[in-house]
Image 1 (spheres, rainbow, N blue to C red):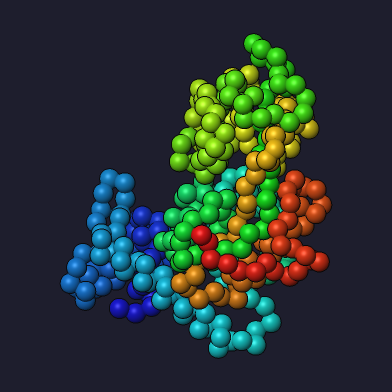
Image 2: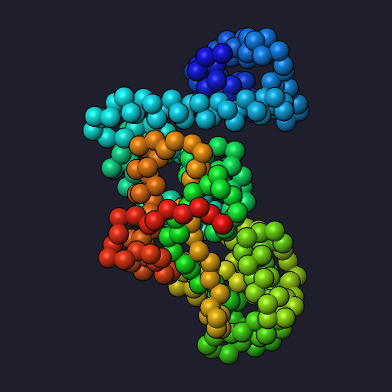
Length: 325
């Protein structure tokens, strides 16, 4: 095997198709098939199998993919070390973002990254925190944003901000009056019809833990994991929900939704910038990590993101790094 074959193999597994990988790599499809066949002969195992859903890695293939990603990352770092005198970082950076973070961070981050680092190709993938966490563990992305803390010493993280969650309802009352103005307690929320993310979703787990600690049973009629759909359902008068204030700003300003702060103690969640600890970090990844942190800090300070910064005394250049969990 050589580095070229490893790069080809990783691309095939990532896109799940020889033809798509050939298009991405600008290599003839028969050549890709031959490379994989040569690798299978060399290793004495099958690495891929075809299914109706496309090409998938066998158990041996998954093992090879994990090692191949590490090897390719180390080679990129080695190249940068040799070219240490280069004036600016370059290369590809894969960044995973939850939906609520993406709608706030994606445009300003991509715009500033293109202006500052034209040689960096920033690829952003959007998914729920659970999928972002899996991508980080599998080496499919270089950086990610998580709201959940996990006991995983293969990941390094730094907390950036803490954002409050609030109750949201339709602009006009439904079949009963809205809660009175001011903070609402979990006891008050127990009497409301709720639309929440499904069990296992990080936000739902946080809400359920708080309800359990206060011995409150929540009444949910709809479980749906997409924040955009939750807002539409609430706006349509089907119930209330609990979401971060940053995700509701536009709808509240347009008069489509109404919000109430949560009573003491404030219900909040922390945002973490996360990267794998078991892989070397390239200059390009380091540059995007620092730029993402700086962009988040700027959004909070400018009031575009209603949240509290964590450990950002006197505009420190970076937060201290700590192991999640």
